[in-house]
Amino acid sequence: MSIEWDYDVPEPLNKALSDEFVYMLGMRDGCTFTFSSAHRVGNWLELKGIVQHSVVGNAVNLNEDDRTANFLRTARRFHPCFERGVWVRIADICWCADAPHGS
Image (tube, rainbow, N blue to C red):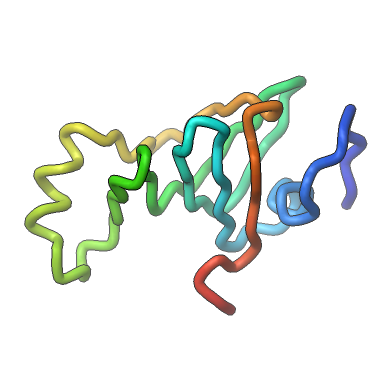
């Protein structure tokens, strides 16, 4: 299912609206999000299933099996995990990838 956009967007972003999988996008300010699905409302995109969020290179991996889990538990106080999703402005998205870690 393809969605009509007001401007060009990367195909993985369009795919994230109808195919739940693993996607990653980068924002204009350097933040990145790894997520499983998206929902568009006007000029905004709701990202769901956030599994990783980084703020200017400070990644917070939410995988408890990670060998750095102790550090990440502490870091979560400062980096929200967005359990209910996060809304981003579409115009501030710079890039998007489908299966960023391989499939």
